[in-house]
Image (cartoon, rainbow, N blue to C red; front, side, top):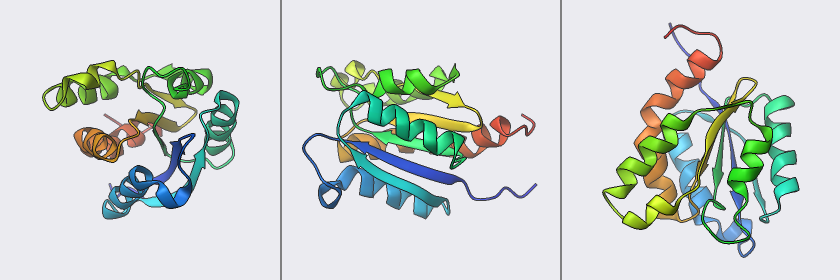
Length: 160
């Protein structure tokens, strides 16, 4: 069965960058394009929980995106609220993807064990938190990139 390209949104969270400085978001967008997936949404927001919740909800419920990738806000800083905002909107967690990312990242840099990233589902949208550094975001997405089309296919009612 031929699958349609995934419709993807990228949400970068940063208090200190603007869109012209969002190298991590740009790198993730390039990876999406290289997969033949469609970039349907992009935004850069400050680390404000209510703004993140509003955007994630809109992209799922109104835009009906297949996949939302957040970039940044997953660490231990008091302003890092992306995991909490994601948990506010998801209906079910999908822990295996972030577990895989942390396991592979551990082999490269042990500090990645401090990531609080989450992954989950709202409706038929899969949401995955990625780290804010360009290298970390690219590596993390690369670790799970091959399973995402199958996850979306299954989420949309396709067989295992």
